[in-house]
Image (cartoon, rainbow, N blue to C red):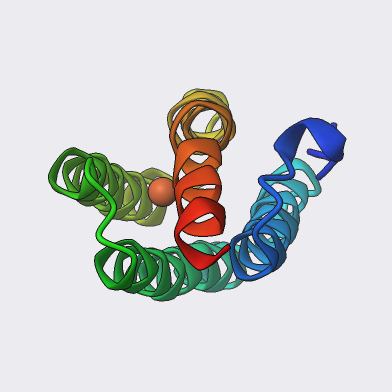
Length: 135
Ligand SMILES: [Fe+2]
């Protein structure tokens, strides 16, 4: 089942929302590649697409927070760093084991599930802060 970027995931910040949409697209591509039994090399490529875009998105979002003096920046960056470690671990494990049921479960829970929660609980606060500062 694919993840849908719906209204509940919109933060109202255009840059953040655009990048979240792209990240969810890439996650769906990865999950689809696992579900349809693509080869390891191809799946490694989809994992890399997710990891690369995560790094880019977090860097942009962290810059936005610093520029707007977001008060919870330090904690937020900590969440990002922990997530990047999770993605790197999952990438290594998928590469070693292939897309086993347990690995696909990790992609769904530890990556997609985390991201959706993070968007709703944390990024929504960032977007609200940026909006206040800029208005
Ligand atoms: Fe974030």
